[in-house]
Image 1 (cartoon, rainbow, N blue to C red):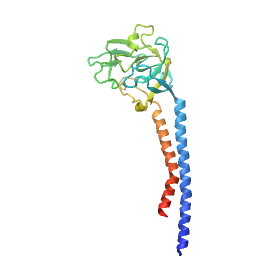
Image 2: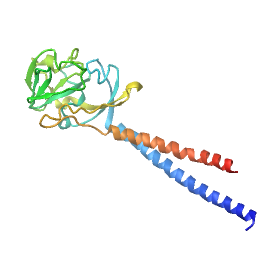
Image 3: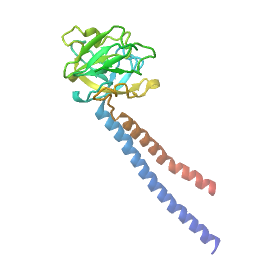
Amino acid sequence: MSSSTTRRGAIANAKGGGRLGRTVSGVVIALGCVLFLGGFAWGAVEYRPYTVPTNSMQPTVHPGDRVLAQKIAASDVRRGDVVVFQDKLWGDLPEVKRVVGVGGDVVKCCDKQGRLTVNGKAVDEGYLDAGTRASMNDFSTTVPRGSLFLLGDNRAVSQDSRIRLTDAEHGAVPASDVKGRVDGTAWPLGRMGALSATSAFDAVPGGGASEGPLRWIVIMVVAGAVLILGGAAYTPVAALLRKRRA
């Protein structure tokens, strides 16, 4: 076999491999676009942004943080969820607090270790600053059916259900006032990420916090971006390799 025949065969193989590579690259980019745009579309349908108005939820979220809240039914709100709500007795603006009791719960504070109890079960609230007492003042209440008992994670300053025990709703908020469950922080960049789901209420009969699809949405967007960049990089990388072989 002559050298010219061998060369022509190598060129043909290279062209065939190049066509296959471009086809695979195109498929990878298309799949990446589906994941990337699909993730953003899913997020836009499920989540709405809210700005945290006060420092009552530190250290979980900070004043001025832009959070993402998933719209959920009143019946889906669970103990431990961080929620955005708006209640006429609390003011005109949406607020962010943590659910510590749902309808029928007996919420008390505090036991000998300074912990909250729900239906007689002590709750270890790991989201509070270490050594923080669950409440500066003792209290005991039964949450009305269809309502929620809400506390801020920054118990020293939070204006929450504890200080409203004498109002018409005994500090509780109708579950229908909840606008969404906070699943993550979108801004600032330094605190961007999903909120850690708490297991503090898992031992209470009826279970604890719920969790939305934010993590899967982020995975979709990141995976899509990686596939798009990887597929787009094929052509220049392949051309560079061919030049080096020439």
